[in-house]
Image (cartoon, rainbow, N blue to C red; front, side):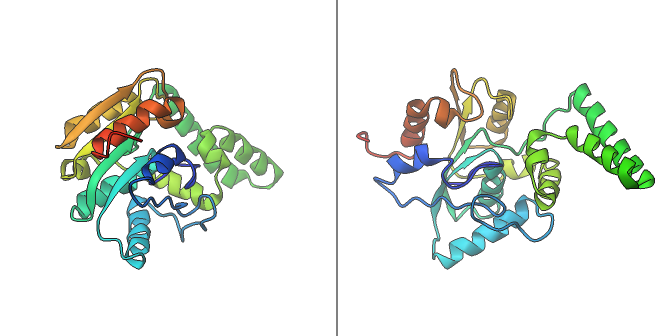
Length: 233
């Protein structure tokens, strides 16, 4: 199970506990989250995949199913595309990986942030520090709460478009989406359903970016069916 940005290995516990009845469940803290140290440098999802593959190799795991949420979906998409023999079935819930549409307000904030950064570097001193504080206030909540290293990671991965990788996925894939998701909107799930050959999109009503927390029963039931586990759970 691969958690999203700002989460840790416990984020997907709603899936892990019932699934552990029938299978071994691994829920690592990804580098820079939970108890795992930050990655070296400004890593992208390809670096996270390399780290994860090394970890799986040490555990002698040669075949697995994956449940991935949000940022964790980027890693899962790369793994399924580049190492098809490793991945049995794939579940992407509110997954990142499709480049978001940039709204006009977002474009203005990005331009303003870049302008303030340049101005702060030129002015320097206490005024420069004040300008830098104003620049940071324009960033997203994820960016503001992150360390300098993780801000670099976020800036890098947010630009990734994994559409080509999605086309290469051969694993049967469940796309599990909350209808009211504002972080990775439903149109992203629909787009992934178009790109991933053996995929099915399941939409959960009255659920947002964490459908497994908003509607855990429905989310677990959908995953249970996709993994073809025994009816009783």
